[in-house]
Length: 99
Image (cartoon, rainbow, N blue to C red):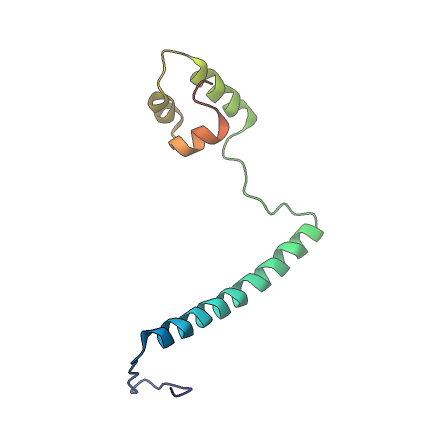
């Protein structure tokens, strides 16, 4: 296989194993090129005292209200989800189905 393929060249692959190996190598290389500078940037930000985590979706007050709403037996999870405008997954992160 040629080292460089120009815009008018045609690449013919006669063994798919060769293609998958080459693509896997390319994906790994691209991943390494992205991850390394990202990790360096995160380390530098942490050294400056910056928080590098995602902000909480709910405030402590909202979490208390969510717990209270989930504790009410007459309310269904679907009702609480609609009331707070959250996904089921987000609600489950903060409270159990029983409140």
